[in-house]
Length: 97
Image 1 (tube, rainbow, N blue to C red):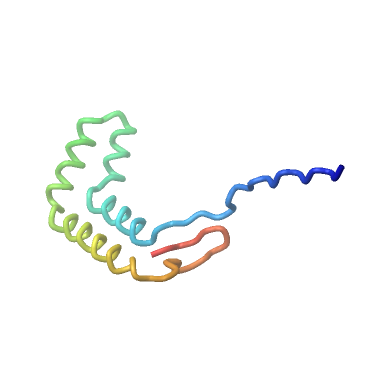
Image 2: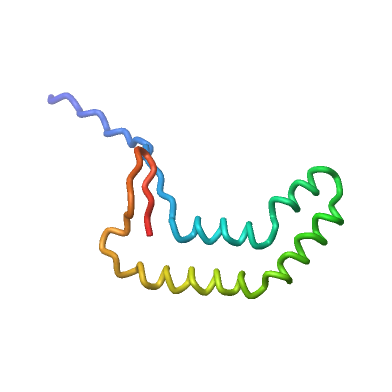
């Protein structure tokens, strides 16, 4: 009788992808909403001031936030036509459109 072959073991992927458009949109929205300042206030124990600050920043930058979201939507629609979708590869990190 022939010896059985061992079942192939699955290995975890050693790379991960980051969407350039989504990462840029998230950074822009975080900056526009003043999220960093609000988090600092919340960590300091002043939750009311953090929420008030976040709310006023979002209402003050409403047009910029809407523009950012619109631009991200258009960019995602345009990049659907890319064949590979990968913009750069930095070691285990792949940056896709």
